[in-house]
Image (cartoon, rainbow, N blue to C red; front, side, top):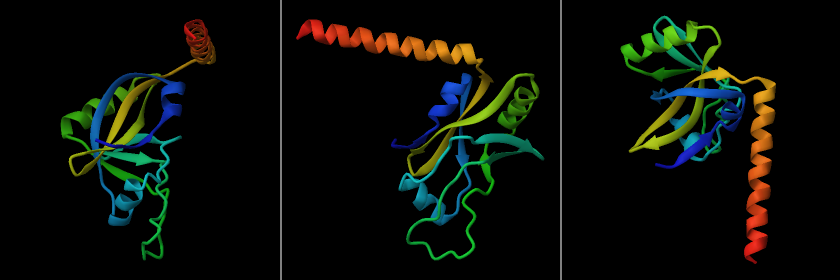
Length: 149
């Protein structure tokens, strides 16, 4: 199950409350481009329109050997979810303070899957605390390594 892209910014900017797995509707050259790890999830978001989940603001550049002339890398793409999951996401997206963000793109068997998360935005002080905790953990690991040597 190789992972092709991870949205690290989403995990930093948002507190992920719940995750779901969904399929993506892609064209042939887009699939080849994804398998070559050429996509960017940073800044992407998911909206619900007419009982369909739509992935927006995700860039999949044109595959290097493709012959398509008029390709749009930032187009919106349909996400494959069950009707029950779409109604659940619709309800969650209408709650105040919650948003739906893409977390990662990976394969499951021969299919390309998208991990989506229901997220709540973090405050600036929470982000600072995450950075401070990371630095303290890094320094502790350095001290342990130095002590063992």
